[in-house]
Image (cartoon, rainbow, N blue to C red; front, side, top):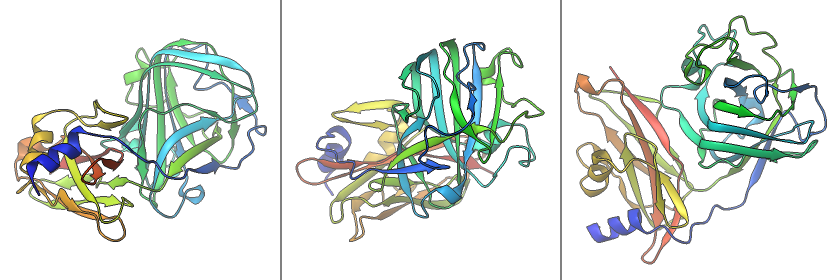
Length: 326
């Protein structure tokens, strides 16, 4: 494939389609039912770090791309924060008390996907689903549980969310930590662990990218493009961060760093099969081969991809992260 075609895929993102949307309700589509709790959106705490688990039993048994997150408040108000970040990851844990750790990141996973990052203003209406308005997407693998973390500084306003006793949560706030946003540990003991917020996840099925959680140095693993536009070109790319690249009507969340340029313009021997044609099922598999350099241990490498034809981009994926381990 000509390098000009590869550059077109990276630099000209137009005509993107997200496909039909679906909804996941946990535990059910009942935004008027459930006791109320204003955690993590309490006005009495200036900062929070809050995490909850979405059990696989309520999730599809196939990969999907999460595009938004909604909660069901019992009051109408506006919540603000000077800085709010939402991250998503996978876990096999169903509860925090049974996880054998008190570290948020141990449950969230090594290289979580950022789905919201920046100032926050959220006006909500009581007794209905209110979308957060996520800025980015997350690929669910169709197998494990999802962990969703909300952390923020500079709180204003208070919103009470409806909760359910089947949803596990863990948290810390400014009563328990001088810097809750960056606090590594949740508060122990966890009072009211099974009182997480009921929620709705919006999803689509097309243009997913799935990367392994970890890869050992000196080894290789698959980077999978799933449910793309069959028979069209694809281009995968890697980087060391998740900065937004504004490329037309779609954004790819990868840093414009040397790793990205190498993965796109050169590829092998590290980035193999990162460009080509999607098969009849809209899939493709690249091979990420990590050099056997101990200096790489601990780094997160993020991947995303686009699909395109000779005139325009036809789809773009989520970003997914992999940590390099011994």
